[in-house]
Image (cartoon, rainbow, N blue to C red; front, side, top):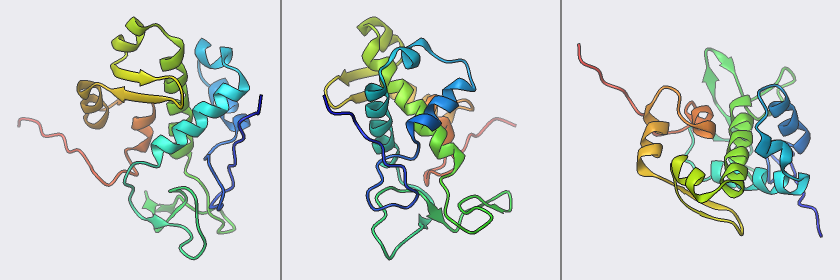
Length: 176
């Protein structure tokens, strides 16, 4: 059986991931590790990370791609981003970087996909997932869950990390 490979070269022509498996393992090591993640094989983790990256890149992001002269396979890195008066997209030597939020979002999305394929249908429905497809992993969330993720303070998993970068902003209006 062939092993699924992640290519996490920043601004690379053949990149297919923002994180390596080692980075994802470190991310989950630094928090409460869900049993679904630890029980998954490395190949399934890689597949979930690849699908998570593809899902992230479907969004419409602020700012421009970092390299407009050579083909950059993924949506990040971006250029021109200033958040809290600091450049988030280059390091001290001015090399492009992938924002931490994007890496975290990919890890969380991978976990969501692993959970969706490892649980029962009742667990899936309770998690707000309308439908799922196991081969080539595909998930459709309920409208109420998506509204909660885009409008609420906490959001769900991967979406809470993407909010800063998404073009469409949700403004909460309260009564005075």
